[in-house]
Structure formats: C-alpha cells, structure tokens
Length: 307
Image (cartoon, rainbow, N blue to C red):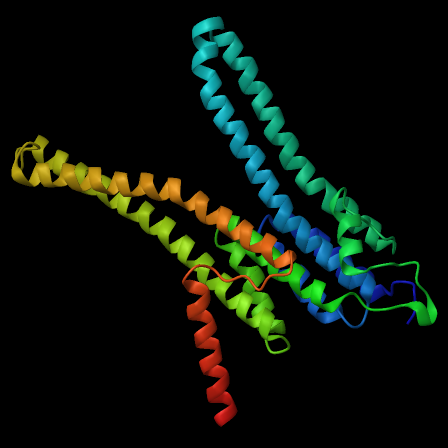
C-alpha cells in the first residue's frame, strides 16, 4: 500500500470535513466516504470517521453550550434589570450574542481548516478527539510498506454505530447517520444492521413524539382562538359549554407539550448512553425496542435462508 494519500483520498477527506457546513444534513457524506474507502485508503477512512465524529459530537456540544447560555440569560436578565437597569441587560445581551456567534463560528471554522489541510494531503487531527480516535482505530500514518495495516474493523463499526446513537440530538437529520450505515454496510455485519435499525426506529419515535405534541399544542391554540372569536361575535360565549371544552382542550394540549418537552431531553440522554455503551464494547439494546427489533431481524434472516 502506498503511504501517501492519492487525489481520491484527499477529495473524500476534504468533502467529509466540509459537509459539517450543512449543519446536520451533512452527516451522511462521511459515512458514504468511509464505506467507499474503508479497505482502499486508511487515510481517507480515518478522516471520514473523524469528520463523522466531529459532526455528531461537535453538534451535541454546540447544542449543550447554547442551551446552557440561553438558560443562564433567562435566569440572569430579571435580576440584572431589577438591580442595575436596562443598561446592564443590554451589556449582557451583547455578551450573549458574541458568545453564541463565537460558538457558531468555531463550529464551522475547524472543518474548513481540516478540509484545507486534507486538500494538501496532511494528516489533520481535531483537538482532543483526533489523537484519541487514531489510537482507538489503530491508525498510524507513519507505518509503511509491509508494516501497514487497515483500521481495526470492530472499532470502525462501533464508532459509526455510536455516532448514530449520539446523533439523536440532531432533529430529523440525525436519522441519516444510522440509516446510511444500515443501507451501505448492513449486509456486511449483523451488528451494524441491528444497531442501525434500532437507532433509526428510536430516533423516529422521538421525533414523532415531539412534533406530535407540538401539533397537538397548536391545534389546541386554534380551538381556543376559534372559541374566543365566536364568543366575541356573539355566536358562542367563551363561558358556554363549547367555550369551556375549548379551554380544557387547550390546557390539556399545553400540559402534554410541557411533559414532552421535559421528557425528550431524557430520550436524548438515553441515546448518548447507548452510544457510550457501544464504544465500551456492548451490543446495546434500547429498552423494549431493542428486543423487538432483534426478533424481527432474526425472523427475516430465517425467512431469507428458507428461500
């Protein structure tokens, strides 16, 4: 094997890093690149897997920091307004905007630097994650000739599966990661097939739960608004039976949305835990869902063998 990256290797690596600019939607490209290059170029394979990890873990960190900043501002603004007035509030809002802009810019800056570096055939490593991932995958670009080996296959598979679990926090687009692994590598590995399918189903359930609650909430707003308008026009009074039903429906839908908003982060945490357990060597199964998917896959495999 030639130790220097070819033009094709550099293109795949560069595109995988640049796909982070798509902010969630680009998570598909590193998986395709890894699947295409996994036994052709360990340089391209490593860079694609590193880009996948950055998009999944980096997006998660970005969301957590942004969410923490929002909560901090919500808590601090009333206190600042009461103690120091509008000027202090304006200063803190300016600091918040700069902080969020800095996070946003840094998220995009690193992949651009990585892409430029890979375009020149250099072995780029993301801070903190890059060297750890290289050790985990057994990647050593200094190996040459007969000493060269491919990346550790089991660790490759576990990394892409774990990133699929971690991507649960990327609404809708996060499903692209496990779905792509299922399509392009599911036939090669039963482990990849099972983990990818259960992750797709799990993330789909989380999304349906969240958007279903949002739809119910806005439907409740529509009902109560309609009741109010009819009451104002004299057709239906807001304190009539229909008006009370509308208010109760709105209150119920609001309660459901509030419960779901509190519950969804717990589902995100479960997805992160699943990814962690996979990296630690477990064939993790989501509660209830995992066994159902496993039985379904086993049944399909038996049926295919009987054909």
